[in-house]
Image (cartoon, rainbow, N blue to C red; front, side, top):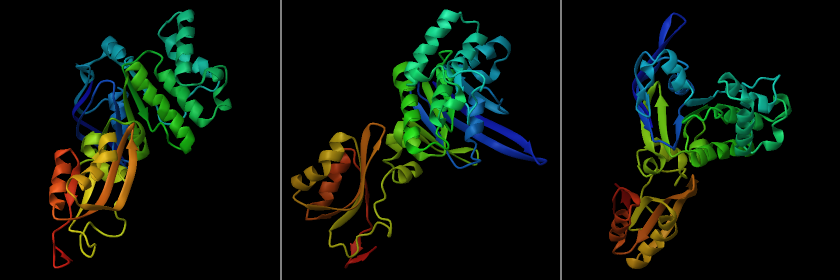
Length: 339
């Protein structure tokens, strides 16, 4: 468990004080993937550096498994750092060492015997899918392969937390997918808690359980991805789900339907059956007016603009709400004109 409480951090820049983090609070559940997103300058990388103990915050607390890291120093601080693996932004591999040599470096520094180092390095190259590249030098690897080696190196000391700062920056889509697959395996197979700093919401869509949105050093939205996408006011939901209407706001005028609504459905059962069952059960005609399907991790999610026609249209919507559909009704129309 990672718990951040009221974290603040300022820097001096051009004789001015820049407040990079302003009272940030959030939690990351053990064994989960949390995406930290926001525009450039929002404070994402500063947050990661503070959690990774590379920068010390001005105030606040950072707890990993109940231990406040901010209060540590000396031997206790060094021990805590070994529990946090860091994948820095950009390529940080040593060019004069092979890929295997880079991964072994933290093990050498920790005094691990050679036989144990070789075994651990072999395990990590199998995890990241690069067993055939262990003897290659960084300049002989692609950008995505170098990033996977960096992940393996960060995992060498068997940390409980992995911080990845923009791990897919400047990678093409297929290479990005291979890196995200590795991060997903780190969570699912090793039980490591993963914090991913990114500007790319596709990363959140692909692997994140939770997400925190930063803006000007503050958390403006935080929670489980599947919970947030069901909220009509959520920025995360607006970004991750298909648009229901590119041209006009939700309105019933001139549609010919008794009720028009946006409906968000989460999960295999809801996406596959809820709308047709509502139509059949309440004897209403239901038309899809916009929207579409997507996947968040392994979970299908749909966002549709629907039109219902029939005396029991409102009852059909209420029945869907009772079954955890998120419904936003259009304004009531009077004489064919939207309210």
